[in-house]
Amino acid sequence: MAIRADLGRRVELVSMDPRCGGISVGLYRRETSEGPVGVVHSYSNRAGTTERLAFIRNALGVLGGLEVVDGDPDGAVRLLCGAWHNAALKRLFLDCFRVDPDLPLEPRPLESNDTRSTQVTRLRSLGGGAYRVESTGGEEGEANRAEPIARALVRLVELERIDETCVAFRCGAAHDELMGLMLVRAQNLRAALREDELTASRGVLSAPSGQQ
Image (cartoon, rainbow, N blue to C red; front, top):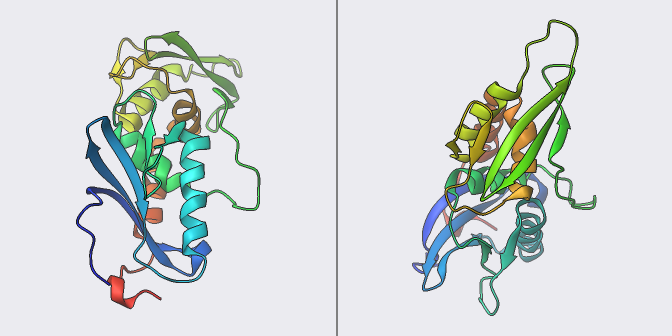
């Protein structure tokens, strides 16, 4: 099978998808006259691959707020802001392989019980792509978690840091779906980075001709 040259630049690769016979699936960034788009592609012709790619594209939309580009033969997707938030989209893509395809897809809320304390963490949209991290509740003497979670979000999503608890997208647009997804992961940054590495590197990548 010939390698396609029109997919664009590869952003992330899952070398073995356990939910579809171990196929390799990549996310590619393609530049267009209307801005960058993402293409989900596999060189495998294994049965079920087309349906699996359609599920991943749908998950990108529901979990990350991307839209399908009208008329694109590859079903390319893009962010409504017209920008490309590379770190966030890489992690969104990896998260699409962790969700159960038999369960309904729903965007994550901007509020979560903190996994490392008894506090509740919320993201408050301030407009202009900015968010404030707020942590409330918790046991007496427990350090407030808002600041470390804000720092983790800066690293995970490559956001600008406005102050100790406020972060912002450089595009100036709100991305509630992406932020809701990243909120839980920011609560335990080290574990999130290890899980990303494991998901991306699971299995051994074979050449396209070797995939069934």
